Image (tube, rainbow, N blue to C red; front, side, top):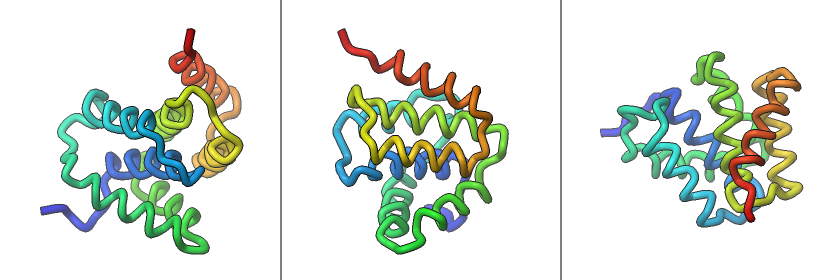
Length: 138
């Protein structure tokens, strides 16, 4: 049974889903990136992927509300340990860059995430550059 409390892993997944949904066009490449992160990264070891549909619904429900993004960020800040803020931003950047380009809406979402997590600008730039480098095409 899925617990009612949000875990740090749920928060990371929710943020990736929110980035993908930010431009109202969830692309296959973004879904593949999210699933790949959940299935392969150490931060998601022992994560119960059966929780993902509930987290996805929660994100969509929040994004449909007027102050839903603020509420989502509040949940993430309350749930995610500060030591994982850069990880959250890196995952967000990877999802945004998954289709080879970061649109204006996704860029604004990344900026909001950067601000909400109070990431150092230099560190954020390095994370962004790494995501861009990983998602270049020939």
